[in-house]
Amino acid sequence: MRVESFNPNRADREFENVAIERLVQAAEMVANAARRKCPVGTISRPMYKTGPYAGQPWTARDAGQLKKSIRVTRKRTRSGKAFSKKRNVRVYAGNFLAYYSSIVEHTRPFMRPALEGTMSEVKQIIGAK
Image (cartoon, rainbow, N blue to C red; front, side, top):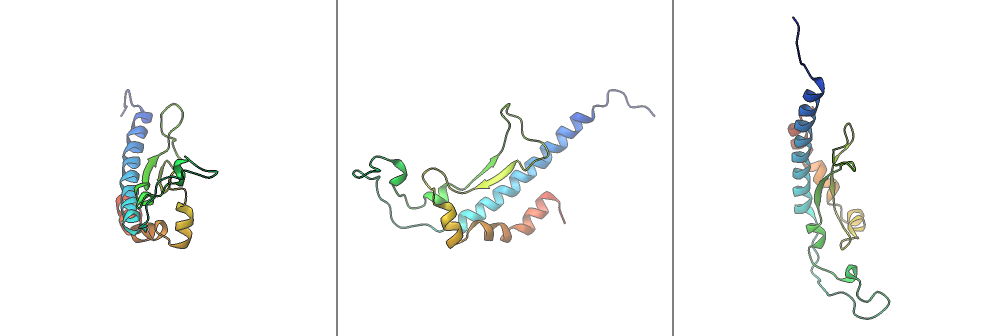
């Protein structure tokens, strides 16, 4: 039997897209669990008006800013294509305004327990044993 016009690269791209979509779905599950476990402060205040850091937006505090900063990202190359054969789906907590995410993670963990709590569902989505 002879197969004409078979393009294995096209099949690889299709399999990779399906695998990446599963990874994104699993990462969203972890991110949702992290949002549920994330500690939320009660203090909100505007940015400093005087002092050496006056007018800096990171001096403001917003209750729930850390929870709002939890997100799923997919790393891409400069050309816009996803890195193949690398870890390209990540769950991040923190940003410019919630720079204290690593401090909170070390004192009151929320990301690691979220991953550990959803590990069975993640394995089911990905198809791992």
